[in-house]
Image (cartoon, rainbow, N blue to C red; front, top):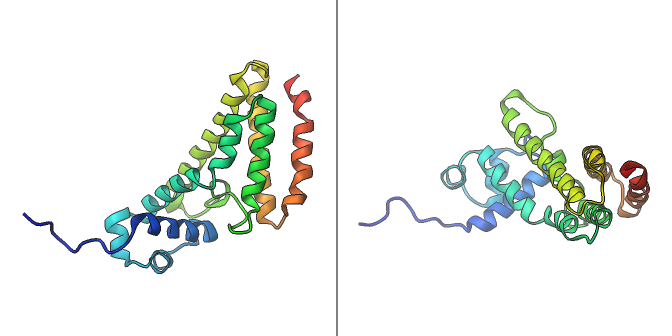
Length: 196
């Protein structure tokens, strides 16, 4: 028995990367289905048939973003030999990623949908959950080696998460990589006070 319908005539992985580029440049609400269709080179019906709704496509895009542009800061956080070095490397990698000349200058996790219409509340909640997950990753890394006292774990994880988010906003507003470096230096200078 043969398959029904026309065979797929596009590369889903390439189409997803093209959708990532559009969402990254325009944000969730600033991206229309016609924008996606034009960028991906497929009709809206094919987007719905293969990827589901715009929201479902965005969720897949965010997974791709996390595995690509979002991975270097997470890897730096995981692989640093001490908590302090891991956080410093994470901030450095974040600044590198959000000022990369080939990408929009911000983190999608932070700024792709910070506000918007009531209908898009699930997207904002989805991103908020991912940001909470980022804070939990930082907290877990701070706790891993036991060199950060338990009472300092939550305040420090919130502080360094806030620094990551602030770097993204600064980059979106035009800050260059050299201009972000003193922010990282100041954030790391606070380590001993925060850990005390």
